[in-house]
Image (cartoon, rainbow, N blue to C red; front, top):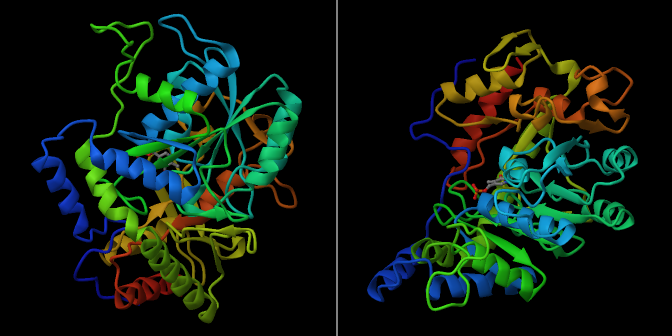
Length: 424
Ligand SMILES: *Cc1c(COP(=O)(O)O)cnc(C)c1O
C-alpha cells in the first residue's frame, strides 16, 4: 500500500523548546557570564542533585566528557594516580555494556583500559547479569563495570550491583538516555559509584549539548571540577601537578538546560504516550512485533525512544555488511531495513538498534562474553534452541521508531500505517 509522505519531517527525537531557555540565556548575556561559570550552571547542578537524589553534580561539556571523568575517578581509586602520559586504566580490563552507543565504551580506551564486552538480555535490552557473572568467573581480576540504560529503560541494576559488590568492583552508570527513569523508586544515574547524564540535542531534555556527572562525595566532585578546568593548583600562577581538560559546561548552555528542566516530566509523559500509541496500534493490528520491554513493577522508563522487535518467524531475509544492507521482501514478512526505508520514504526518521560494540571494527579483537562464556568462540548468529549473542539478535530484528515529542498523533498514525504496510 502506498502511504502519502508526511508534509513535515518527523524526527527520531528532536529538541522541544518552551521559551524559558531564552530568558536564562539572556541572563547569562546581560550579566556577562558568557563563560564556564555562572548562575545557570550553579542552578542546574543544584536542581539536578535535588530532583534525582544525587549528592554532588558537576556540569560538563558532554555526557562523553562526564564518562571520561568517571573513568579517571574510578581508575585512580582502583589503581592509583598514573604518571604523565599514561592512562588511569592502562592495561586494565573493564567490563562494559555491549549493545550501546560507542560513547559508553570509548572513554575506557581514553584512559588506556581494555573493554571486555558483556552481552545483552531480552527483558530490558541492557547488560545481562548472567553474562556479567560469567565474565567475573573468566576474569576475576576486573574491578570496574560500565553499564548503560538504553532507550530510557533501566537495566537490571540491582542484580548487577549485587554481582559487583561480591567482586568488589566499582560501577559507572551511563544514564545518558535514561534521565528521569527509575528502578525501585530510585533514579538511574544514582545507583553506580559514578553516574552520567547527557543534554545532547536528541535526549529527553537538551542544552543543545552538555552533560553532567553524578557523584557521592565532595572529594570526587572537587577532583572533577579541577580536572575539567585544566587542573589548576591553588597557586598565584597557573601551576599544574596533574593533566587537565577543558570539559566544563558553558553558562549559556546551562541556561538552555535550566529552561528545560521544569519540563522533564512533561517530556517523559509525552514520550510515554507515543510508546503506548505504538504498542496499542501494533497489538490491535496483530502485528508480529513487540515493543522494547521493561520490568513492570520495578522499572519506570522515561520512554526516550520507542523501539520494536520483529518476531523471528516474521523476519524476511536481511543481510548486513559493514556498511550496506540488502533484504528480500516476502508477503507477511519484513525486516528493520525495509521498515527504515519505508520510514524515510514517508519523511519520517527511524534508526537501527545500536550495533553491538563487539561487532564494531574498533572492538573486533576485544573479548566478548555471553551467558555461555566466550562469545568469540561461537558463531555470532542466533542459535535455535540456544542463547548466544543476544545483542546481535536484537540488532538484526529491532529498530528505533520515530519518537519525537513534537510528532502529532495524526503523524504517528501515518507512521503506524506505514509500518503495518511492511507486513502486508
Ligand atoms: C548520548 C549518549 C552518550 C553521550 O552523551 P553526549 O552528551 O552526546 O556526549 C553516552 N552514552 C549513551 C548511551 C548515549 O546515548
